[in-house]
Length: 263
Image 1 (cartoon, rainbow, N blue to C red):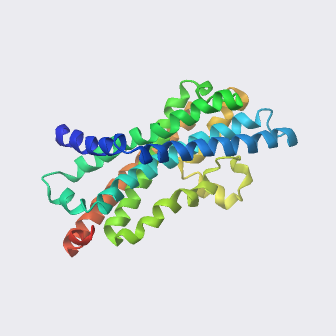
Image 2: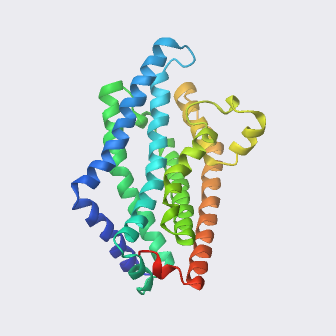
């Protein structure tokens, strides 16, 4: 694996972002709107509910972390789609670049795009709603790492679908996380789900992560075993995502469909 090639691939996308104000605006706009929307909804719940003493803090922190996951996945997908839209897809795969280098470059660059959107939104929540995800402390690092790995995994699965089925699969990029959101128990405890769905939900890292986020904010306690379990689950899915990506790539290469991808 060549770090120079990974750096060059990453730099291409960074320059695309830096040189385009609409791209930067798009990255910042949606997370910020999410903060405003969920901030005011949470304030309403605070006035009309006694379930949480700090409803705004709980829901808004969940919204920020979920948006981090969403942006991680979408950023990965968007960089891959931009290669298709710019008709650079074929060049990418005929160049002397390994698949592992492409995956590494997209994984590293996705965090850059994600942070552009997350940081302003998280900072805005402090003066507007007196909510700071940084109050979670050191465990926040583990939560973000696990969410990022799982987000990239979803990105890998979607890009695998793009290679296998073509650009028509791109709608799945937007639908995948919305499909998983109800099972992730992002805004409510897992006990809300039917028992049979609870078993399915526990196979995802999201339940463990958001349950621990609420545990920290409500009880000021942290169960590192649950956080570690979530990290391990995310990593297992990540390895599976890489395997599926290679399988889709080899299948598309054998069928000769890669050459038509950008057309």
